Image 1: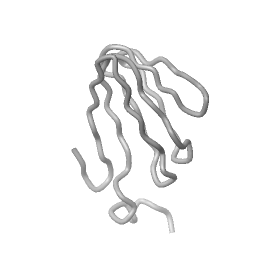
Image 2 (image 1 turned 30 degrees about the vertical axis):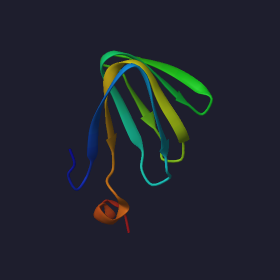
Image 3 (image 1 turned 45 degrees about the vertical axis):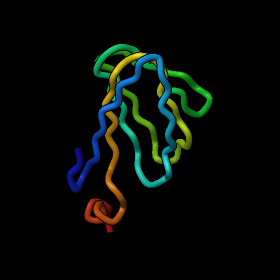
Image 4 (image 1 turned 135 degrees about the horizontal axis):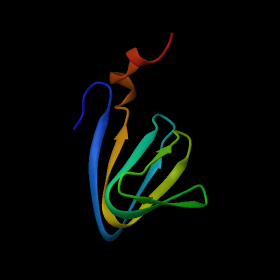
Length: 88
C-alpha cells in the first residue's frame, strides 16, 4: 500500500531470507508482526519478535531479514512525490 507520504509492504518468510539496501534516499522501519526474524545490517544482527521494531537509516546500505515470521516494512515513496516533506 502507498500514499504520498509512505510506502508499506508486508513480508512473510518461512525459514527464508529477504535482502535489500537502503539507497540513501529513504529510511526503512521494520515492525515484526509475528514469529521471529533477524535483521542483519552493518555487521550487526538484531533479533525481532512480535511487536518489536527496528529503524534502518537511509545510509545503512545492504541489509537482510532472515527467519520465520511476518513484518511490515515502511519507507518514504520516491523522492519526486515526497518533495513537499523536505524543509526548504
